[in-house]
Image (cartoon, rainbow, N blue to C red):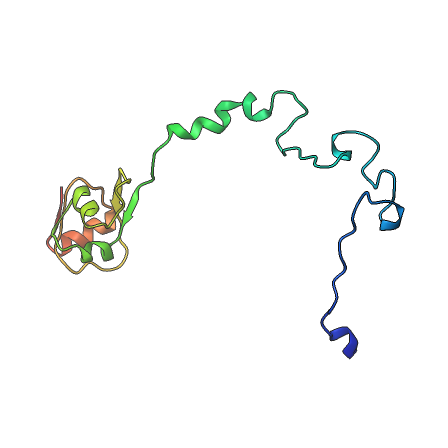
Length: 145
């Protein structure tokens, strides 16, 4: 590669102005827009979903786009041993988790999973626990109700 090819460009070429006569460099007369119609005229903006006036597909199949509203508001929150270690209380319920901002208030369900190491004795009430997490809690003298 030569030195001239490595130099940065110092000029920029302006975009061709369409429909400004033969001297503009981009045709005259129709200026590559075809003969007649909505898109040949200036200021034509047709939305992507427009189907030429017929009933759009979005309105034809309302349940295809709306069935998700019957599902769960939020998925299950995963609570790790690191989160349990940070709690200042030994009894863990959904209310205490929300109160100490371990999980957001929008969560309806939660589950304690075996991630990290548990360093204190806890009592879990009304929250599902994975099998390995149950072993770890009981090993430290805690309980699950």
